[in-house]
Image 1: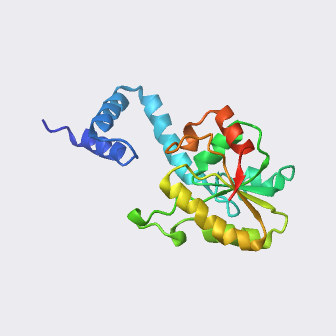
Image 2 (image 1 turned 30 degrees about the vertical axis):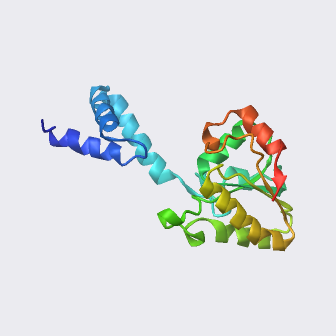
Length: 199
């Protein structure tokens, strides 16, 4: 059976989201249709607002409403440490534990030859420029995910940063191999930060 065009378009829109296949997209589309009109309007406005009002911090690459972001602008943070993460959601995960008070740098991806992602495709060049400009940074803590791509990215960054005489550490593997920082609980993240090791 062919769905009416508005439903088909809605299903197609949901399928553009990562991890959403046709069955889930169809379920979401029909759920959306059953929602109150005010709720649908609010949902649509939230999508538009998020896309329109958010940008990336020119210093760290995190999602922000203002530039620089609140973390980079906060003078009380420890500016001698920078945690390098894959995605903005990883910053949020680390901030939730409320134990790390340094700075961040968001790569917006990892090195992945299979996907054709090289160093120029992620936010590595800006990290190196940042380290050159800011002599206060004494340690780079690499917090990429414990995946082959995350490990390769960590090693690549370590090779680039070490000659600058900056300590390079990696989150301890309290994080399970193959897991994402986003899904780790606060205690696991805290132990991982505490047990970081130089690479």
